[in-house]
Image 1 (spheres, rainbow, N blue to C red):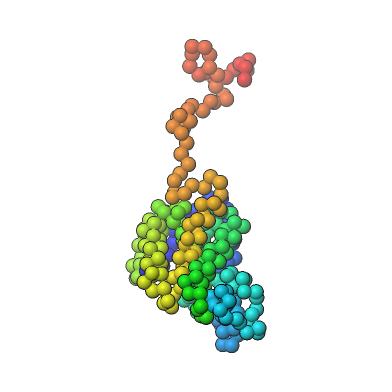
Image 2 (cartoon, rainbow, N blue to C red):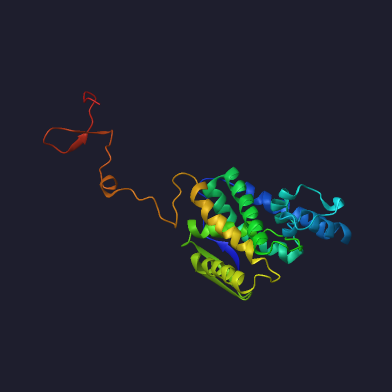
Length: 262
């Protein structure tokens, strides 16, 4: 539907989005090893061994011991760091680059990392519930990214973002326009095409987790929906005392003299 290019949204609480950049670097490094450097057998083994397989998670099937790299519960997370190709990786990472920094800013580094992994796990869980007997491995960061998108649109729906619509037309739009359309598409496709090649269930699971978790994981005082913290009018209009001035009874402010009481 669209590709995000840039958002006019500066960081307010952190100087550098270390976790966002670290996640991107880790995803790229794993793809370079499993998708570029490694041969086909190793690449396929990584997909099966690190991917999330509903039939294995719900005990309808088992993996060969040689492919069981990690305990089965760990695949709720590891699947999100494996990608099938360059464009699969690139599309996820551009979303994370544009939207992840501001969500990390709203939460802080550690809580954002926990948030990201929780959204990945929620995406895998809903994907599994949609097709519990599926033996196809789920891979890709889209479940976690969907959570980031949901959090962003709840935090910053009115921020202008540049998007490339239909791969052709660059447009500046309020964030809620393309992001809510994208979110709606995920729910619609889950109903219309639950068994398609794209895991709409993982997307929806990530969206639901992100929308709920941002409410409790954001920093104290971080507003939702771009609502600014407004100073009450009585306080805003109150004159600020000037320590260099003094008030004499029945007179206007005058310059403070040495013998005036402080």
